[in-house]
Amino acid sequence: MALKRVGILTGGGDCSGLNAVIRAVTRTAAIGYGCAITGILDGFEGLITKRSEELTVRSTRDILTLGGTILGTTNKGNPFQYRELAPDGSIKVSDQSDRAVENFRSMGLDCLFVVGGEGTLEIGYKFFEKGIPVIGIPKTIDNDLDKTDYTFGYQTAIEVACDALDRLHSTGRSHQRVMILEVMGRTAGWISLEAGIAGGAHIILIPEIPYNIERVVEKITAREKGGSPFTIIMVAEGAKEEGGDVITQASASTRLQGVPQLGGVGFHLADQIKSRVDLEVRCTVLGHIQRGGSPCAFDRVLGTRLGAEAVRAAAEGNFGVMVALKTPFITLVPLKELAGKVRSVPADSQLIQCAEAIGISMGR
Image (cartoon, rainbow, N blue to C red; front, side, top):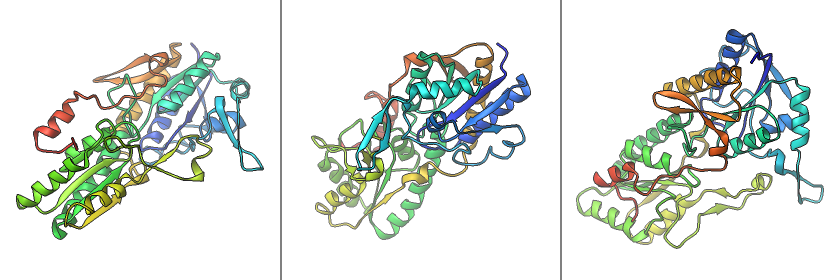
């Protein structure tokens, strides 16, 4: 089909590589198809409030190496369940999807590129069902999207977490301490597992395997008796103890998101260990450092490939799909097949088998 004007928005949490996608979509649409590009600001919020800016080859020429997203993003703007703070402090929930569809049409867009993770793409699919020609582009540092080998942003997050572990090794060894690194991962432990293996962690705790604190202590004690009185522990924020619950933070800032804010498992684990061993225990929470900064080469290339293929799919009239990496190719996957799905680390994962084969404790 002849593309005249396309729109692109970035939703959910930010990550490295978003600007690579924006640049690729802009350049491919403008250079390859003579198409105008509208950048919708702050995710679906911008579609509801009709806030946007023109994107051109010139305006996006220097953004490849930048972290974050020049369009802004939010994980609080679901148009189908739009949450607003009322004057009395209560949360008002309404459906603003028809308004968003109206704005899409008034912008004269032929297609909407939705860049995001599981939640963002689920919203994108709902808009496709309402008649908007949508193409999804997979983004999340958690790498928990189904039907694609990798999401961009993940490899950069791995590099950051691995670098942090490298640094904790040196200080942990010097002081003979137990060093805990808490990383992101609400329900999927890909970051903690891969970065933990790459960074030489001795214990890795992930949401998919509830940990037994006695097994954790056994590993620490065994290392101490074996002449290695320091231990490096990698733990995902969504990890939980056997029979326990995920640890959350009471925070008013999450009320408009409608989801609990995780965090604190690292310090909880530190307290558990302190009461059982005669070693100093320190916890570091990597937090949003994993999301920020310049993307690694892998994520720059993947983001660029996904953006370019998304525009080609639009020009061929393929909508209601997500561009996905099926190594070595970029393929199209129906959004219907993945909307609302999260890819966790399988119980029979070769990564878990590899970790345990080389002596890493998974806390079980």
